Length: 121
Image (cartoon, rainbow, N blue to C red):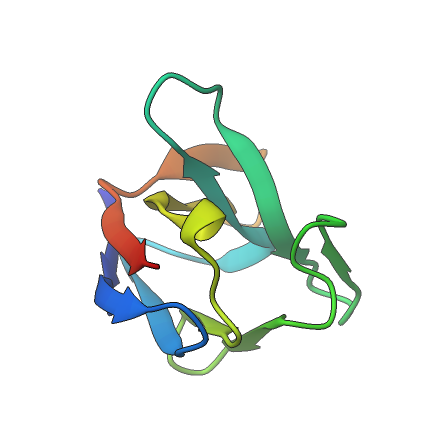
């Protein structure tokens, strides 16, 4: 009933930029925390950046100053502007959202399928 679809991944040279998008659809009353995670081969999934409904944002130390997270609540879409990309940013990037389907239900945790980002040196 709720779906998250990421887009915008691809292959880019080191120093380049990409913009990821995550569109939420389905029965949605509100989106609380909205975030980006990534998982590189052989490594655990890690948080990249998060955005809460009150406007707060947080970033992993490894991306501070290079990545910018933003959200368009009317479009139910999350973005991640990635600048000055490094080979170590190569990973499968996932969108995550805590979504309330109705006023009286607790938020559920939802994940997208992921979009691949590859940074060549």
